[in-house]
Length: 524
Image (cartoon, rainbow, N blue to C red):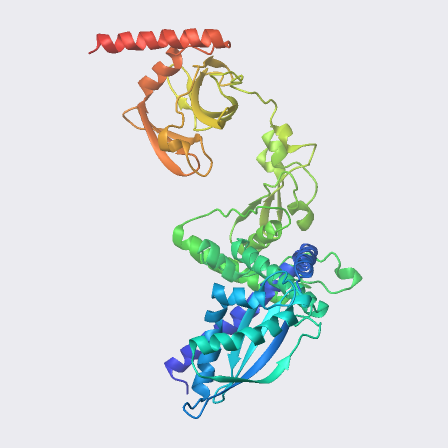
């Protein structure tokens, strides 16, 4: 019998295994999806690394001399002295006077720089000095010069110490850092793999696609009711067009059970909440919304419930094809006023299907006429490229629309909020269009993720006729502008329209400023 602690450990281990498998599957899926891009990136990175090491390579030549430190009858020299001599080499080579003596003792000229390092073997009186340089012609003369100069400086700094040359290795002309093509290509290969791996990691961490249940929990924090398994038809001629319906006897048992499990859980939830309607949709085509909708309808019908399914996909209707419904009118014809609700429905397998209708041309043909309500012609004062914002506000004088517009300025694009009014009976007819703007970006509102922008998508009127305009600035912060219906109507209907010429706009603005100043003075 396992204890509670043992069971928890076992479960944690299983979770780690599952996570590892899932992690590997994600990487394999990413590589499969972007294999061509990764291959190209790998080749580019590897090529850059190989080229870098190839073109920046500089050969290094070295020569080595090994000393044995020995003393006189008055002084015993041990390994500690040899170690101290070895450690003093970097200090000595940093001395300008020593460098001067060394270079003056060289037979010929030294081109380029050089370095001198030392090493000592523990528990011995031996230490080695290695001279390295990029110039092969200079390395051996430097070693000879060091052999002449070094003992003199040791006598000055250390005292009575005798140095005996144990070994002396001149440069053979072969660089100590051999430029191995195999090593360079290995570095390029490894760098290419690291970059591709890092890029795949960044992609997997940033992508917010739901591919499995764990993704849904991580991204949406929503509870997954159930998962529908993938059904792969057998490679037989009669199974190529297999219908994924729970009423199909040839469908896999696991598929049917997953659908029935979803139906059962949805029924429990809807019974608890009192909901009667389910909306099934998707962001892109071919994600399975038709298959899911039809099977849910069939599953609810098998439980003895009254079910109606409306095929609202007017662009690519597929419910009729999946269920092999007879051709006839649908929602498209109903919206046009060509059919009644009774004529667009078909009952099959206990479900009342409302067909999408016959696809005739573009769905946008359902809209008989499109009109630009407010043109907002480009000018120095007015805005262009306008778009609708909040829901129109109904007043006694007309519909007041709060929209946004954008125009190019010397400081870049500027988004502002403006208002206009249309006729109550004919909302396409503009009856008041004040020039200028209602709300513009000011102060901190001008700076953000997308600077110099204000826009609104909502406005409400309460029982006191107070207006609350909700707007955002620079895609960074939210604000609420307050006014009243009375003030808004006064602004829209008493502010003159844009005259369309710069000179006239300036005259108009000056006149408005004078009137405002006079009003303020009169009400002091």
